Length: 232
Image (cartoon, rainbow, N blue to C red):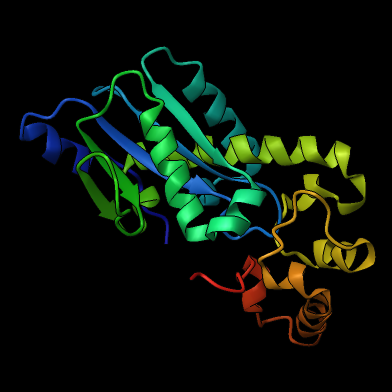
C-alpha cells in the first residue's frame, strides 16, 4: 500500500531540541553480485517533496530525477558507504550492510545528533538511533537515503556491465533474475559475484530456481533475492 513519506519522526526529535537528524538506508543487500551501498542524508527542516518515497516504489526514470534533485541541492547533506563483494563474502551480508551504514554516517562533515534507520537497529552504532520498519515509506530522510543508495549502486552496476557484458548487469543490477541465473550458469561467477551466496557457490541451484519460476509463475523462490550460505 502506498504511504506518503513525511517528517513525523523528524518533528518529534526536533521537538526535543535536536537539529541535525539523518536518515540512512542501504541498497543491494539481496543481490548476487556487486557491492552493498548505504546512504546517509540530512534534509533541511523546511524540505518538501511531493514525489519522494521509498526507492522501490519509484519507476527508474523518476528515481533518477529525484536523485539528481537531491544531490544538486546545496541544503541537502549526503554521503555513501560502500562495501564490495569480497568484503561481503568475508564478513557476511548483514555485517557488511551495517558497516556500509557506519561508513556513510562517519563521512558526514557535520555529524548528526540522531539517526533514523530503515529496518532493525544497527548494533554497534556510533550515534543514537531510531529503527523504523518500512522507514523508507514513512520518513522523508530515510526515503532520500534509499533513493541515493539505490541510484548510486545502479550506476556502479551499469559500469560493471561494460567490464562484464556477458552477465547483463545493466538490466538486473546483480539480482537473481532468470536472465542473471542463466548467464551465471553459462559463464560461472566473475570477480564481483558474491561467492558466499548459494546460486553463485552452487550454480546448479540457479537452474533449479529457473525451473521453479517457469513451472510456477506465481511462486517466487527465496533465492531470487540471494540467500547467503551462512550469516554466522
